[in-house]
Length: 264
Image 1: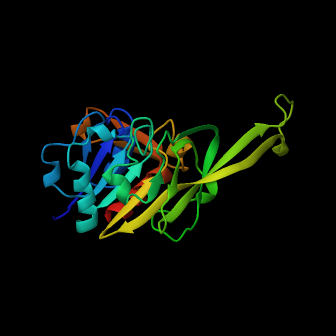
Image 2: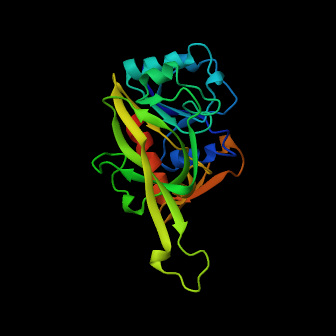
Image 3: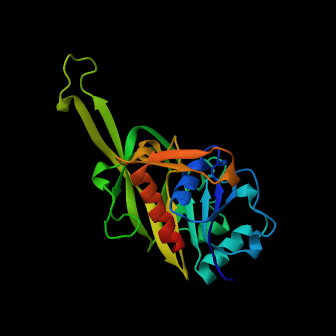
């Protein structure tokens, strides 16, 4: 099938809530997209269309109709479409996602758990690149190490590329009450690390898995990453007066992720 230069973005509630963030990034970068809100199924003509990129984010597996996931797999393998799964309670295994034995699990570049894979931490999980020589990670200030609060735990498949690791930390005060604050009063310990962004080529297409979501609470401070701010109004078709205000580096990272996987 001939690919449309559009994104099919499934999940993240709706544009009045979590979906507003990625909708804002796509709008800001001029990338056309269609929405499938959480709790609703793809349209009746879904299997007659071929998108350049399918984004599945916090979207219940049960909402897919018969043959819908197989259709996505075929578009990736045969036509060069992209598939990006983002984290959430209804992604990967999650709380209600349970994609571990789905057709999408066959092509995503990660091995999913067969039980609840959600991880929530009170100390920041810092994102650390394994390379800077990739278009998704290029020209971003990774030395500022954005921290996230939650993610889905998975492992990279053999042959896939881990671009980001999540570094779990433990942050404590050595002195809880003190007249003066000194640098050595704060202790940050390394606990463990996990694959966080995994990518691969598949047939003519590309696939990627990002462990966290795009909206608070899991994405945490990353949503405000960057000295500059991006204010973006959303298309009127999504609702009246909707907008997002986000960090410029957050917007750039997700724009580069979408652009690479979908070949925009």
